[in-house]
Amino acid sequence: PLVLGLESSCDETGVGIVRGHTLLANEVASSVDLHVRFGGVVPEVASRAHLSALIPTLERAADTAGIDLADLDGIAVTAGPGLMGALVVGVASAKALAAYLGKPLYGVNHLVGHVAVDLLDHGPLPTPSLALLVSGGHTQLLHVEDIATKITEVGTTIDDAAGEAYDKVARILGLSYPGGPVIDRAAQEGDPTAIRFPRGLTARHDLEKHRFDFSFSGLKTAVARWVEQRRLDGLDVPVPDVAASFQEAVCDVLTAKTIDAAQHYGVDTILLGGGVAANSRLRTLLEQRATDAGIAVRRPRPALCTDNGAMIAAVGAEVIRAGLPPSGMGISAHSGLPVSTVLV
Ligand code: ATP
Ligand code: MG
Ligand code: FE
Image (cartoon, rainbow, N blue to C red; front, side, top):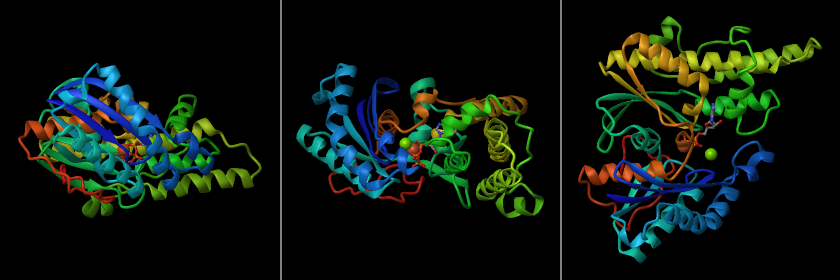
């Protein structure tokens, strides 16, 4: 099917167009520059930016894909989770577009998009599989039996998300927002064994109750304390070493728990998705450990890891393939939509 996907859950306005598993266009307009001085996304500012970016982004996508919108088989839009005001702009616009073109409307899950997008790079997703979803707001392990109909959360963070930890540590180190890419770069010059930061929820008594869960808030505090102590001692903060050591702690736990879960659920493929999936250390360490365990890893190209419209179109194409009925014009945005609800 020829599907248009519209994304507006946070600070990226994305319009993607796919034909089945083929990516035809993926246009993204980000309002990140407007949020930099606040060190995080300002919801009101993001909503207004979506309003002004939506039509031009849509026109660019249709142009790039070289399609006529009248030929679409469906329109998919992010129904949640995300910032309410930002989601509402996308949902209302998708409704208007669907009504104008007379096309079926699908309200889909943003998190599922982060996992599904890899099929645009590497073809149909092998199932069952185990997905590690690591983004700005979520860190979850998912058992995927069917990307359109059966996704079960088997683990989650009990405090901060991995991306959130990157952003907060960047702030502690005086680096810019968003912190993920900046720490990734700084870490290239540092020694990952310089400082031994804590690995959350890996102690034996934690594993009993939280075998597949994550915690990054203790790590963030440990970094803050370490940096503060250096400053009190009148010493320079070795930013590359702190970045590399922090990154190693995050990636060590993420990959160890993912491999453990994959083996526990007896799957032979791991799917990696979400903004933090663009991280260079996470990609190589996961690949390394999975290879040692005889498990395959699928990861989208970095540009498809962060928020975009193609990932939403990919979910739309999958729900159409599964024969699910359209959501209809009555849909609304759900800021806390659970990952198990692929289609609203
Ligand atoms: P969610 O998907 O949970 O709703 P979101 O959409 O805001 O949250 P994404 O766009 O998926 O989040 O990811 C953004 C996050 O990814 C940010 O926290 C950012 O710092 C992080 N990130 C981006 N690139 C990298 C990288 N190379 N290394 C580590 N983190 C990264
Ligand atoms: Mg973003
Ligand atoms: Fe996201």
